[in-house]
Image 1 (cartoon, rainbow, N blue to C red):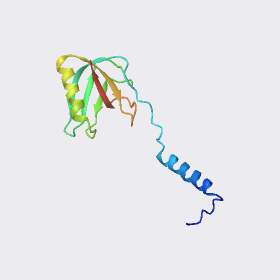
Image 2 (tube, helix red, strand yellow):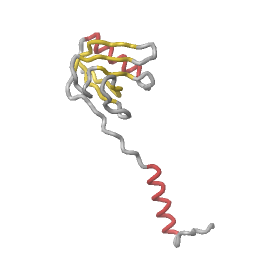
Image 3 (cartoon, rainbow, N blue to C red):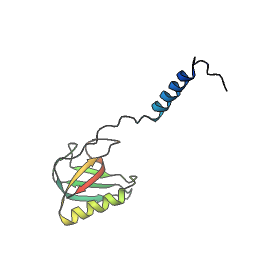
Image 4 (cartoon, rainbow, N blue to C red):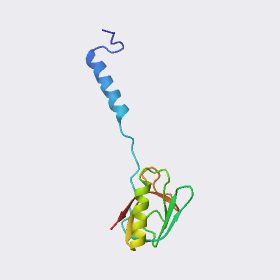
Length: 117
């Protein structure tokens, strides 16, 4: 068996290893996800050639803006676009959730999800 130096006992070595494992797997603190508490109707949908999709709401329900973006690199982008178009075509109101990664950033805030009710 290898030496436990600089640890005086196997128990001290085990505690150090357990602490290192816990610290290495700790989840970093993530900013809270801003979610609209009020719904709004979509008045405009603008898909860009880059793949980004911008939508304009009829009220400022979140992040001091009426314009939000579905990121072209988001894994669920197609599903979000479908929900946005369905709500737009049906005249339904939506709730929006800003991206956890970026939070509120004013005009063009990235969306993490869209709720259609």
